Each structure stands twice: as C-alpha cells, then as structure tokens.
Image 1 (tube, rainbow, N blue to C red):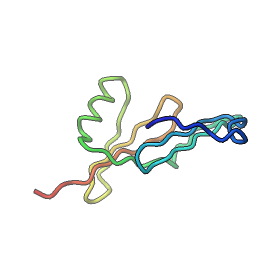
Image 2 (tube, one colour):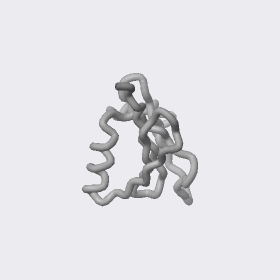
Image 3 (cartoon, rainbow, N blue to C red):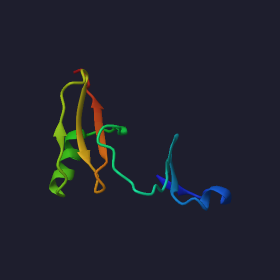
Image 4 (tube, rainbow, N blue to C red):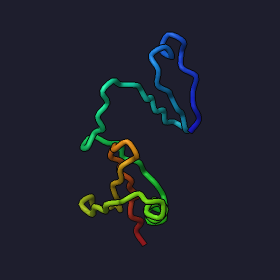
Length: 93
C-alpha cells in the first residue's frame, strides 16, 4: 500500500490514508483511544501458515479458529491491541 495525500481540509484532522490496488484504508486519530476486541478487519492472504509462522517467530501470538467452513484462519493482535483476522480459502485438491 502507498500513502495518499489527504485533501487539505481533511489533512488538518490528522490521520492518514493508504491505497493498494482497489482497496483504500483511512485511519483517523481519536482521543482516549481504546482498541476494539471484537470488531476487526478480515484480511485475505495466501500462504496463511507461512504468515502465522512469521508472526510467531517475531513474538506475535496467533490463535487458530476452525469455525469458518472452507477457510483456514487465525486471529492476532497488533501492538495497540487491535484484533486482526487473517484467512485463506481452502483449495480443493
């Protein structure tokens, strides 16, 4: 993802915007921020097991969840305590 320049009227509010392909993420600044423990982005990935290992090798805990048929998935928390879901569709052989 690359950072986008915000319109001047919105840049004064702080935060930043990013774009990668067809996806944009807008991050804002919030006083008295508290990380969400339930709401979270679901991020589709490839090679989910390699990603989990890389995170674990760098001290990030992952929790696998097999309750989504047709997908491998796990949860992790970023350094601010936000929950992140990573998932990969299971390929039929």
